[in-house]
Length: 66
Image (cartoon, rainbow, N blue to C red):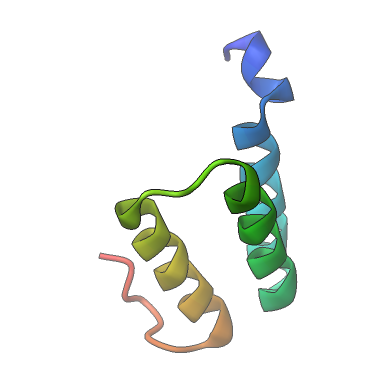
């Protein structure tokens, strides 16, 4: 709803991650995270959450996003 968010790096990251997840494309997901992390380091909590999602794409620990 915030107009400036649509042009932000965070919004672009979310769009890439959602697209990669919908396509079950682990490589695209990893590349999007690396690209974002190369400019702004991700904190430990966010890294853990992104890794859990990546594992669900790979088919490991499905339903383990608690």
